[in-house]
Length: 301
Image (cartoon, rainbow, N blue to C red; front, top):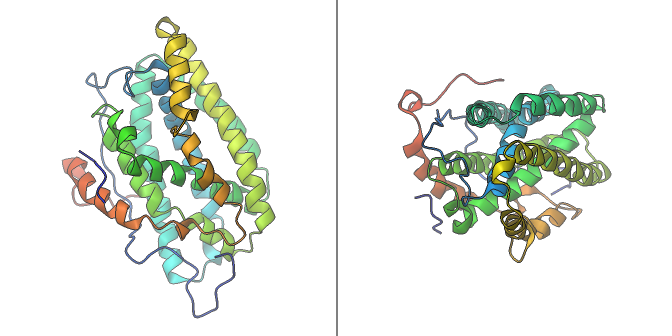
């Protein structure tokens, strides 16, 4: 299941501001994932550390993706390219669906005794402080975080070993999220370019956002591991850290893609993985809940 088969220069008026390939359709889709007692407590490689790390990322998504939506929406009226305008609508809709599906997962994590509410309050403090920055700087942060989520999404879709380590009850959520993150990976970036974003802004905020994400994700992971300390294991934690940062690790393998963002002429679709997305999108249709089979029209736009 879900296996792999296989330009900063301003465009002229006759060119499209959007660089998204024509075979990519950015459209919101509610999935209706459910998480119940069938989901193991340690659903990623049966690892205490890795499972809580991924739970921590999920807790970040609902409030984080609302920040993304707000930063892009602030410039929607300044976009005159019809294709990019439509993609902004699709971006907002997809991020809204991601928030809803991860809220369902986060409720499952909360039901397992994790301090989700407290962590969300702490995240809200950080995001509220970030909202005091100039609007374009907020958009630059969104571009940076979208770059990182797109890197992770591509890795998840490319590597069978990553997906196969997930329990079958969790794998569809993360594969679906990866598909849609890839589809809209350039929308915020194209808006940023269209409204005069600079190289200095986008590169500074990649470094800034990487550090901030690392701190928050580490803090959330540690909070959940401490709450679930009875299953803590030094061996499991060391093994998990090696899985992330060792040779060909989940995160260490992304370092070249992270540095690609610093290339002056960089664009998210320099790496065109649209065919990979098309393959997985065909497979993920089987996981749409019956009530959403005909699509979902209610989005946050």
